Image (cartoon, rainbow, N blue to C red):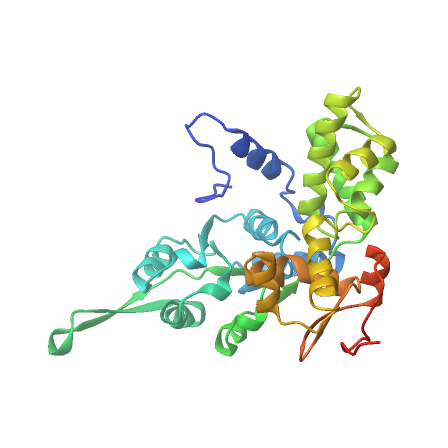
Length: 346
């Protein structure tokens, strides 16, 4: 199946370390639904939707993929195009600056093709409004000129499938959400699922990996395949340079310690986030803007990358007044609480 756009298309330029890493990451992605580990209920439902669309000979309904970063939204978009035996065009929402660019993307789609828009919550209002008629009626209305000399015409589109990916569904408007026929939420993976992913990746990368090492990496990967694969590649580096190339349990633990990923999977930024709440703001509550300023990190990074796992694992609580560090955060960091759970002094 030809793919018209891919974030990992080969380039004539000489490979750099960063590009080699990106190509290696892409090679680890599954290409069929049957190979997609984790999210079993979601995968089973998508298999049904795809088979139904193929049997009807029509386009798959529009799909919204949402969940924290690194769980496989982009991978699933490419898999859907592969399963449908159609081409996929990839666009990042911030890059679609006006409806002319949107029209250029839509008019080159063939019947049943897939348009994947990443970070779809960042579409401008004008572009989003023009996308409504494209999604519902498979047409786009254009206007040329101003005033009495303006000319309006309609461009018909081939029936297509829009696959949108977002980490923040709360920023999508109601009209946009209502136009997706399939909502697919990706949740954090279990350690067992991640261990399967790590072992599959080790096979592709030709890494000698023991089962205990795979589980150790999986436990510390914060429920995220992207992180699991990154930790595997870095642990492989340590095993090859400091050992005989075999990644066993001891080698994995040593590598993870050097990477400053602790037993709970928290890295230095995660721990610093919690320490700032506890040591600088007395355990909270504290607003996200204050935390972003103190940590010198963008607010979006804290909300989309740092907080979701901490919230799920019970290290952090959100209240109307701000963020609070929980008892588990104090215990994990071996810090003593000096304030009550709502900030009152003992």
